[in-house]
Image 1 (cartoon, rainbow, N blue to C red):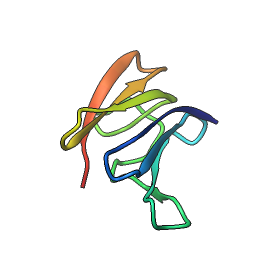
Image 2: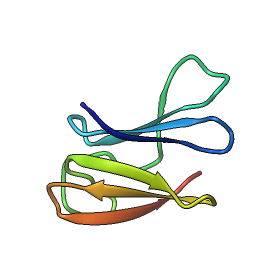
Image 3: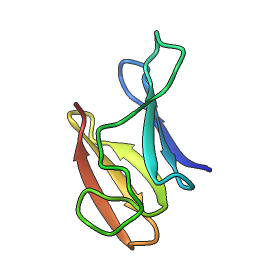
Image 4: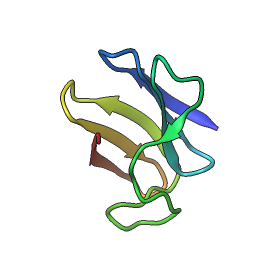
Length: 79
């Protein structure tokens, strides 16, 4: 289930997938989406997500994810 998304300056679309506990991106010139480099497991460790609800970008090199079930916001570098 898609819960949050944003588009960066390069017209890449980022999506928080609530049901699969993952973040995906679709670069402008590519037809397929790809996972953002986060350890995608349902969990509560620093690099894990459990029902990501929202997502935003700081305009530079990081995304912020509202990690719903863990009741926190996590920051991840964009690579």
